[in-house]
Image (cartoon, rainbow, N blue to C red; front, top):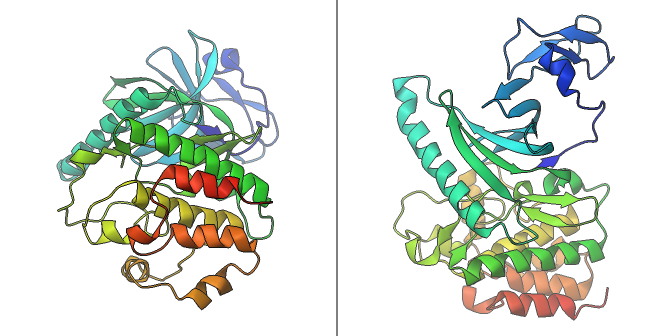
Length: 328
C-alpha cells in the first residue's frame, strides 16, 4: 500500500506506548489514554483533527489512515517484531443481523484477495501480501507499504504526466497482466485507484477482490462487476465471456485517463455509462477526444478500446510491441 503524502512528523512508538501523540498540525503532545482507537480527535491546543492509534495483535501499531480498499479500510502501521512499516487492511465484523449477509460477502472477497495476492506477489509490480489474521472480531491483512501516490491522485488535468511515463507505466501493467494470465487469472479491475506509483516511477498494483481464474468466471451473473468508468468491457456487460482482450480494453481506458486527465466516458448515472460502453465509437469522436495525444499513440489507444474484442489487440504482447514501436 502507499502514502498519499510525506510524513509531517516522525513516527514515535514510545510516545504512543505512553498514551500520547503529537499533533499533526502544531506538534504539541497530548494524551489519548481515554480516547477511542481508530477515531479522529481534536488537538486540545489547535483543534486539528488527529487519528487515534491502536495496537493490533500486540505486534502492530496502527497510526495513520490511508483510505479505503475494495472491502475494508486501510491504515499505515509499524510492525514491531520486524521493525518495518506496513499497510493494514481491516475488515470489521458486522454489528447487526441486517449486516451479516453483506459482511459474509465482504469476507469472501477479503479472503480471495489475500489468497490471490499471496500467490502472485513475487512479481515486482504487485504489492506484496505478507499475512492475514482475525483479532477481536475483525480481519486484518498485512501488506507492503509503498511510498508514493495512487494514480488517481497523481493524474490531474492541469498537470498531466509526460507521455514517456504513461507508456512506461503501461508496459509495467502489461507485465503484471501477463504474469497473472500465465497463472490462469484475469485481474478484472484495472482503474487508477488500484495502481500506485512510487518515487522511482515503479508501478505497484493492488486489490485482487475481482480477480478470478479464467475457467471460474461466472458469465451468467445478474450483476456486472467492475468500475463503470474503466474496466467493464462490452463483453462483460453482455455476459459474453472475458479473456485478455477484456483486460486490454480496461487498460486502454486507463491510458486515455492518464493522457487526458479525464475518463473516456462521463455520465450522470451508471446506467448511462453502461449504455456508452456498449455503443459504437465514431472515428471523429475518437479523434476529437485525443487531439492533444500523439497521433500514433492515439491510434494504439483507439484500437485497445474497440467495442468488438476481435478488433482489439489480441494479446498483451501485441500491445507491448505497439507501445515499444512508438517514437516518443
